Length: 486
Image 1 (tube, rainbow, N blue to C red):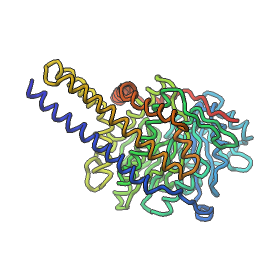
Image 2 (cartoon, helix red, strand yellow):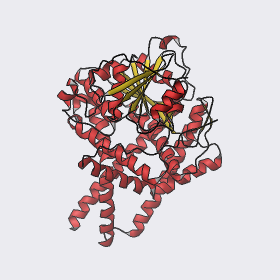
Image 3 (cartoon, rainbow, N blue to C red):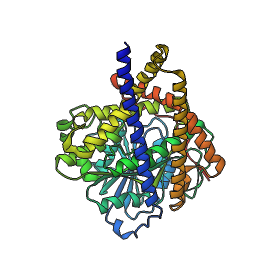
Image 4 (cartoon, rainbow, N blue to C red):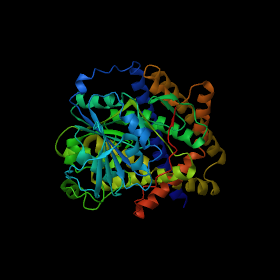
């Protein structure tokens, strides 16, 4: 027993030290990146974008609270050539009626070619100026809705946006530039910011005060660490395997070539051959990026997933424990499903950084993390009772974790704040803190979260494993409040 505990001790030390070194490495890398980007990126004129048409797809299920505001904002973006397609995925509320009433939509009975099989399309609506198209279909899920949009899209690029989200006015230009500069670029995405408690005026954010809701505060800290630290570092080493479905851009021809997004209805030959019939995932955003990597590498083409910190997408986040728990459980279930679907790529040298770095990172330090943490907690309890570990040593370790968390969180927010001063006001607003008191509040919430929210999120991730093995496929949508508008 003693010998077994000592072996487990060494394994846990190796795992958590490796985990810490990877996180610190990504932090240092992002620090270097932000230091180099202390000047505002100057966007070119409209000319380079005029023949780069973008189709924005907005899947909507029971989004009556936010869909009109979302569509209105998206119709006034600073981009010379784009179309907006909203897909009503069998909503049971007034989502469709809100769109018809606010945009004076008329039925358009033109036929849709369906290279990607989807749930039944009931009707197509269009605004008089043809800037807005609405697809009304039977419920089939988010991936199925995106495929219905791809079938009707006329753009060279596909941009996916959640129905509770709004884009910074110039965001499209930022995310298209990497496609123009580098042919290896297959997907791009921008920073997500919590939209809770922000206020709009004339389609612009005029108020972005620090929220008082602790659940929103913890998610703001998560977004800063995830989008402005981890994803920048992983993107730079070409190991980023996930782009948020709330704001990401793809090449339309490649989406069509690999069969679009994974859904139970989809029977595209590429999916049948490489994944199998009937496979699906509750989170489509990671699976599609991994499949794009596979498609490009199998065809001996360079592949690049590019994250950009400058363009901002404001998205509403859950404000209560129950909704957030369901969302995090679903996210972890989707991560597990995506890794199992593409397990043959893990540690496969021919997929280079994606197979040797990216997928192993998500497998060991994202997917397995909750399982390892639970066993580590059990190990500590058993070891303390067996007299193998000094309780004082454990206490000092916890204090060290608090201090390290405080130092990293403080450094991250300070560096990003310095960088944001050279960017647009939107990037400054996305951080949410405006005063020293706000900043202290954010840091304190982050430290407190290490001993409360971390365990809550751990439980949600474990629930994700339960959902995975139970083969559950519910979207577990949380109730929206909508964005305030002056």
